Image 1: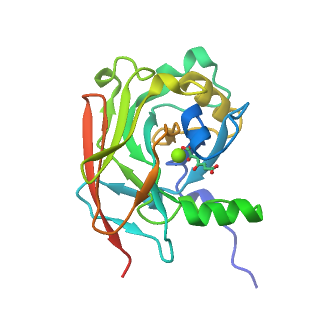
Image 2: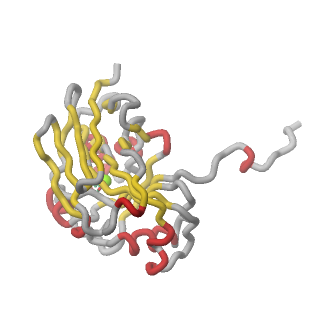
Length: 222
Ligand SMILES: O=C(O)/C=C/C(=O)CC(=O)C(=O)O
Ligand SMILES: [Mg+2]
């Protein structure tokens, strides 16, 4: 006989979703040969892909031959957002983080050709290096701040959040029509041009204006 069922909410944690926006900078759409979308393009990463600075290296996923960095502004959600109006979005944001949306580009290309989902390319362990938390007061204008990435000291990405196709209020409002955002969820807002390969032995550094920098080593999976 089946055991008496219990409410699943006792066993799983609600929240800490990572919702990612793709193709949100025209120059990045152009470099990968993609059309600029007419509405936000969304995918997710699991919380298990987080990698905090000083907690270990980026680990290249098994079989990946073309791992790419994508520097992105992260929005830390502070209060529940469901069907939130654009004008209310900024008051629902608790703060920010600098992030890397690491992407196994070879896995992604294969998935795109077959019409398959992107999880293998985007969701592996260490696929989301993330900085320390920045409070709202730390960034006066999140829609006009530079973000850069360097590989072994050479600049590869140098963009500004003012170039987003869809701005922060629109993104969060749009997402909240489909997924309820909870305190502690993170929204990645897309990457500017200059994405490129990283490999074992590389040192990846990234920065958000003059507010924060972060650095990670890359290691092959043993
Ligand atoms: O469509 C592609 O080839 C690749 C898209 C991405 O990886 C999208 C992003 O993650 C982004 O634009 O930040
Ligand atoms: Mg991205």
